[in-house]
Amino acid sequence: MRKQIVAGNWKMNLDAAQSQELITALKSEKLSNAVQVAIATPFVHLASAVSQTKGSDIGVVAQNMHQAISGAFTGEISAPMLKSIGVNTTLLGHSERRAYFHETDTMLAEKVNTALENELEIIFCFGEELEQRKSGSHFDVVSSQLRNALFHLDTTQWKHIVLAYEPVWAIGTGETASPEQAQEMHAHIRDVLASQYDDSLAQSVSILYGGSVKPSNAKEIFAKPDVDGGLIGGASLNAADFAAIVNAF
Ligand code: PGA
Image: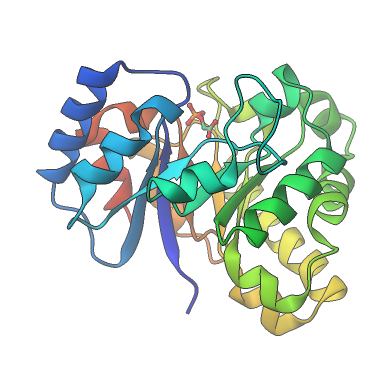
């Protein structure tokens, strides 16, 4: 059975007090035991989030990390730094990192390697832009994002990878991919994995959907057979909404 996962991506939101309040509120919600729950907080809140969630079932995830393990990279955060404060998972490849911080597939392949070498689990994000969907190239775009950043990995390394398909046109726009569009792409992703590796690997990787998931649409999306959870932006900033999404499975 694949893991069901709901991860909140707080992006660059909330100050220290607000971060603590949200985690306190989240801890008081009843969250389904069947679902792995995590929050990706801004770097400055990670250490306190780790201590605040100790003993709970809420995991703490970084939103990014640098591909080098140390050195003259002012303003950056490394994998060993994350590990040293008890963070064991990082997002990589979010479309905002690709668009605003020029992260390329090549750079992401390096980040993936560094994360794995440092025993971090990865939630790897990818997805097509609106123009690419309109022109019908979305399946090819997604295939090449996966190929370029991940297909150098061997089968055993995939145990540490969760995929998050996030069509860029659905992120923060209020426009969600329909459950059918999500299912169609997730099935495509499994086909690509099966042809690069094998069917058992393709069936074992959890694939999350992200892009304007809300309490009102989560159930329908999560009901699709190849959707194993969600990466939640805006709605993860409200404890009741985030809990409702977790409990939508
Ligand atoms: P959204 O963001 O839920 O606000 O659309 C999702 C994401 O960027 O991970």
